[in-house]
Amino acid sequence: MKRRIFRSIFTVALVVLLASIGIATSFLYDYFNTTQVNQLKAELAVVADTVNEVGVEYFDKFDSTIFRFTLIDADGVVLYDTQANADEMENHAAREEFVECLQEGSGSSARNSHTLTKKTFYEAVRLRNGDVLRVSMSQLTIGALVLTMLPAIIVILLIAAMVAMILAHAMARKVTEPLRQLDLEHPSENNTYEELTPILRKIHNQHKQIKEQVETLRRKSDEFDQIISSMSEGLVLLDEHGMVLSMNSAGKKIFDAKKNVKGEDFLLIDRTVKMSKAIWNAMDGKHSEYSEERNGSEYQFTVNTINSDGKVLGVLILVFDITDRVFAERNRKEFTANVSHELKTPLQSIIGSAELLETGLARPEDTKRFIGNIKKEALRLVNLINDIIRLSQLDENQELPMETVELMEVAKEVTEVLEEPALKKNVELILEGEACSILGVRRYIYEIIYNLCDNAIRYNVRNGKVTISVNKELGRAVICVADTGIGIATEHHSRIFERFYRVDKSHSKETGGTGLGLSIVKHAVQYHSGKMILDSEIGKGTTIQIIF
Image 1 (cartoon, helix red, strand yellow):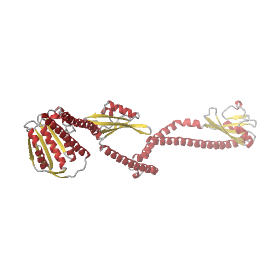
Image 2 (image 1 turned 180 degrees about the vertical axis):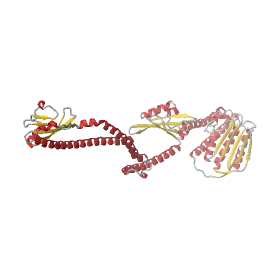
Image 3 (image 1 turned 60 degrees about the vertical axis):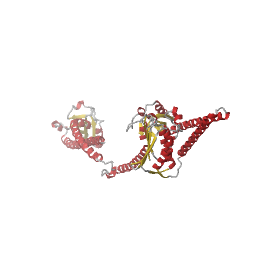
């Protein structure tokens, strides 16, 4: 802008200067022309009077280098000329000033030379004897005058140009300085040119609108960030080039991404073939969905296109943790198969024994044994059905009446019930600790302690020990069941609380039990919002802590 102002001022200055020189030259030239004509007339009048009195002999002694006098008769023949031979001059009858003089008594004219560098002025007057006396004087034309003055004009133009440049630069700086000092952040507070007031007012209004829009966008961005950060599902937004625009904390955990991944190519973060194919399909406007196991969990990946006005703006990736659903489905299938198997086994034994008794194939001395087998398998069925019913009740998460339960009393009751099975296995039951009460369902608390102790006895070694302790730790009730049994390998720790899961299926018939005890414990503890801690090692026994 400063350059444009400078050029404009400089150009205007030069144009004005040239116009001024031209106009001044024209006025001066006209002035000098008028003065010269008047001078010619005055000189002609003096000489004409003298010639009228003295005659043509007056020119014998006439000497003038400025004026040229010519005497012409009435027919246009030159009789005398002060600067040329009259006999060699052409007839002047057609000359403008001669014709006018014959008609009016005096005449005037002006003619340019062939080279256009000079202009000659003519004045003529008629003498008493009828002859015409003409005086003439030449001067430079305006073009020749300008050429003569050209060096001076160039010097003047150069000086004027330098002055104009200095002044134009100063004026441009003076004009633009207030503009440079404009505070566009606070347009209404500027004190500058009045002509800028409407523009500054518009800028001020636009600032207000932009500020409001930015504040709205910031608020929506914060809301969006809070929403996606609190999502348990992974969310990733990509632009049309596959670069990460946003990734919430759940997504970073799932994809094992670093803290700041904005602007990175997502295919460098997740290099799996399935994800690459899903993203390219999304870019083509196709929906993709697939499931995959990662870090021990099962995830469902949904990849969709983000469109606006028919144009692909990016890709949205949603990741759902379906581990519980897959686990539940697997457990359902396994539970159905295990229940069928667990029910079928004792029933087949009962049916087999009953058929032997019915057909009379059993010897009389074996009858008692077969009847005992039928009773034992029937009891096993009853226990299995009871455990299934308990699990179903726990799965339904029905609200049951809560009461104050004294844990030491329940533990003592359990030890009394399991004393006989412990003696058969030569396992010593030890109860220790202090009185401790919680608010809970007594039947579920009993099931927790009973199943833990029953397992500890079943999988113990001969002459082993089972220690049940009830204590308070940091204001919390803690039940701990520790045994000196065979222990559990680390790879089975995560699954022993599943229904019908057995570490060693080949010895399941020997140890007895339904395979649902620890699953009942898990659900009963969850019902009471408790926590289980398992510590077990092969050959060194098992310790399970329940913290309420």
